[in-house]
Structures are given as structure tokens and as C-alpha cells.
Image 1: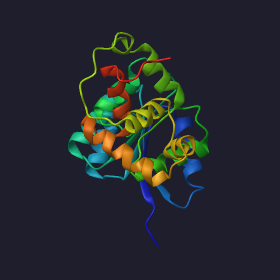
Image 2: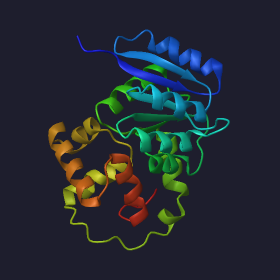
Image 3: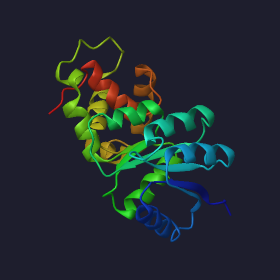
Image 4: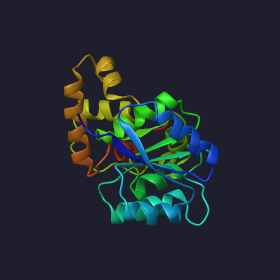
Amino acid sequence: MARPVTVAIVDDDALVRAALVAYLATTDDFEVKHEINNGAEAVTTITRNPVDIVVMDVRMPKLDGIQATAALRRTLPDVKVLVITSFDEDGAVRDALRAGANGFLLKDTSPAGLVEALRAVMQGTSVVSPGPITSLLLNDKRATRPSPAPELGLSPRELEILRLLCAAYSNTEIAEELFVSESTVKTHVSAIMTKMGVQSRLKAVVRAYELGLVEHA
């Protein structure tokens, strides 16, 4: 039997930490190793005793979640980080991604949604709540005045899939929308990321808007 995925919960709100720990205790595939109340302690504790994935709040004393994520990813490049916040803040998604986060969720995500996101991140998929991605796209000044897109060699089908990625479609939803297999979608997404020079679908979305490949609604 595979060992549980080890988790660190980093949040300055004790009630939030307790709720996350209690819910993850009901699952078979996750085990909380650390409960931490600030970013500086998170960097120290997790560096000394690594875990598989970190659930990281954004607003915390001593060191915020974005800075803590960047520090952890520099020291432990294989650790996964899922950033969560109570606020749909302009720029927070982009800052989290640039720091190396694998996903970004609002705290009003359901417990089941959080576990689904953790599982997706552990499988190599980047995740983001619809609210933050909408904020990112609609408030990015570069997106409102896109510069000419460089010639990336994207095929019409790849561009179509990229637009669906920007609309927060999952691979399954893209497959249903385009009447193709999910494996075909995964192949196209991989090709898109390679051509765009990014390592995650979230970064592909951000890059698409920065380059003007897709216009915001």
C-alpha cells in the first residue's frame, strides 16, 4: 500500500488550520505532518523536515506566503505548494505562480474541492479557483493592451485549446467541448507548454494574456 502524501498546513488562523487538519484526517491518502502559523517558521520547519505538499496562506506575519513559497522552492524544488487565501487579490495569482506555486485557491473552496486540488497537484496538474483567474485576466494591464503575439507555431487546434484553458476548462471539459479524447487534449496541452516555454498550464494561461494571444472578455 502506498504511503500517504505528507502535508504541511501554513496559516496564521488557528481555526483554519484546525479545520484543514480535521478534514484531511478523514482521507486515506493525506497525512498532516506540520501545522505552522507563519511563513518564516514554515521555511525553517519544512526545510528541516520536508513534506510532499504545502497548503500555504498568503497573508501571514514575519514572512508572507508568496515569499515563503519562493524560499521553499529554491531550497526544495520538488515540494508542491498550493496557495490559499481569503482574498481575490489583484496580482496575487501571478505573484504565487512566479514564486513557484502549483495552484491557487480561495478559502471558500469546499473541503472536497481542496482535497481534489491537492490530488491534482500531486499528479502534476496546476489548479486555480475561477475567481482568482478571472481577476488576473481582467485586471492585468498588459492584457488590456496586448502587444503583438510572437510566432510560436501554435496550430489552430492548439490555439483553440489554449483559449479553453484560459476559460478555466479542465482537460475533461476540453475533451467534451471538442469531441476528442482526454489523452489527445493532454498531448496538445503538453505541446502548447513546450512552444510557449512554460512548465505549467497556469503559466501558459498567464503567458497567453501577456502576449495578447487571447483577449479577455
